[in-house]
Length: 129
Image (cartoon, rainbow, N blue to C red):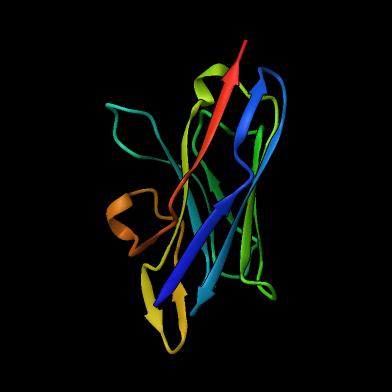
């Protein structure tokens, strides 16, 4: 079992920055993903980090502005969001748990929500002009 808790959302003006954190308890996470969703639209993958942390994947819309990282020792992951745009406004979710091995859950850069078994409760990010 894995429990994920996000924090760090809020309101910011366009061009500003926010840092989202996701703390996991339970099993060890090897790779995670960040998603976002606006009302009436499907949940979309924003960033993912592979086991080991050296390989990452980003949606084209956030490349060069967002950075995903993971602290394995603390079982936490972060999403640093810079140069925020109004269109980045959404509820942001961290996700984990594609494949289990021992006491660890692995994710390999998936951007399909159906590939994930565990989700945080979400944190709202609002970017205004």
